Image (tube, rainbow, N blue to C red; front, side):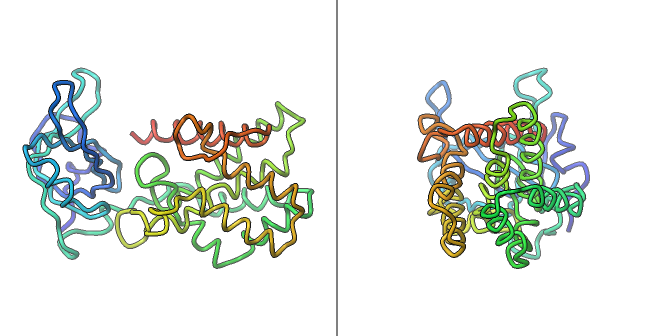
Length: 298
């Protein structure tokens, strides 16, 4: 049975009791200002996500029992917090995992609303603009590979924070490309070929990082253990070795991928600080797109 229209997250904007189906995309044990432990959940359906909080004695037991990416029947109450903020969350009282067949998958899988043909055309236009033959050959090695593009064009860019829907990785990549086109007009000394290469390849490991297409987005075993930055670097390095990409250029490309989450001290996963103009541009473009998109989605 499908969810009721009024129970989709985009419509949960009044204080009321609720009993409906939600996927759990994130779980964290937090401590309140008064020292009380509680379970903080990210509840999701195809229309968005909402914070859910469980204030219960056996927090640790419930935490271990909840499986990310699974669908649950959730009973609780929608409330506005802070008051008069227009932001709503859910106090969860009961949460029970559902089996396949007890929910409709279509209620929980979000799909990009953009025209994928237009997005793909933007990717191809950027590759055609590249002048450096080594970079062009590297990009073609990926984007002329039908097995790769089949996955890249439908993959999500995240589980929770931004572009967390089918086709999200393509949207995210094209949006960063648009930002970097503008940056190249402002800062004309930027190496456009190198920057475009970083934009198109920095997140390709996400096609292996997440499970998607058959249910709510989750982590693959490879993604959970290795993370998309490492996976992206390995994928690109493997192709560059086969193409005999010059070492200096190879190091520049891998540096952009490794540093695109920003400074090591920020704690967002980059093992090196961005040290080149192109790496800095990619990082700030990526971060801006991610943060703005997350704010709009919420």
